[in-house]
Image (cartoon, rainbow, N blue to C red; front, side):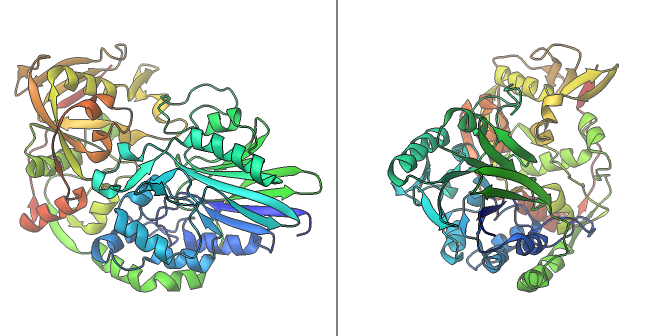
Length: 506
């Protein structure tokens, strides 16, 4: 279209291609197949198509691929080539399967990667920026990823990578582009989100530097458009004279930003992806999808204990026995005194006949395990942080609003086995653990224990810095999904007495 440049952007698609839920097969408005149809309906010769990272990890199909044929080109790579992206950024989860998997993707995708705040073996990993001329205008694009990746990923996944400060890189790059290129428009593509409310400026999370979108918008001159991601929030508008977007996860939305070159108006919007899926995209991945479905429906064992999640709130308030089982698996693998894990958002638990579908629909991340050495004081501090998950309203227990807004973060509430404890929600934060024992004996500050958590939590994920700072005893490199499947292969029936060791009271 004359006098109009269109930017289309996807972000956090997380390996979803097919338009249905892997847990129950129901239709879902997500995935690359639906995105492809929407993109085709909006794209013209003046369009730039961008992906903002987190494409390789997240779906059962991605999990199947990277655990059965990691050296082969993935269906996600093939589909993105078919769709025809112009540029791609990297997200934190694109490192979740390690360097070789990432390079197999990057060496086979046709779109150039332009992530600018990464060094690989001491050298810049990608161009500082790129210039695209269209409709008689010069458009500069540069991309960043949150620098917090080393807090989440095992060292062997990012052995040769170093991540520079995203804000400082954005500041230097925007100034460099303006000085050298004199562009008409500068677009910052950032796999990170917003740390403050865009209207009020109030902090929406701890200011750790994981997300710096608000600061980039407010403090860095020379940027016209910020395409954000990572937080899976639907955000779109203008702030501090800059347009911004952020889309929901799994390909449920497409960001569309129109630049009207005759008036200078920039119009951002989010478009729900409810179009029919593109058959050619489905066909590209069909063979691997068929294999994945057979794999998912393998029966690995049975359970006599109720491990089904029917209500996520109740499963956390009263500790579902699926948590007990996951902690049992972690204890067997780690030998730790105490094991602790979260119920992930959307977890379904196990049916009576347990399949791989149950496992990957319940333990949805490719986490490994880490054993930390903690004192009784650190253990109590850790539990107090978890107790902040709860609040009260109208004489009843509720989830604290900060765990629902701006993004549901229910995966940041861990439940521990190997100890007994009571959370009194009506007490002030920091004073809610009113009882803490191990085998009936009160735990004192000077006692020492081994605590097993996942690698995300061990790196301080969720602002659990007391765990990050605790000495590491050992790391178990086998992922939890494999550990669960191995347990079922050895012991085909799960049966144990329920363990109700956590009390949450007003």
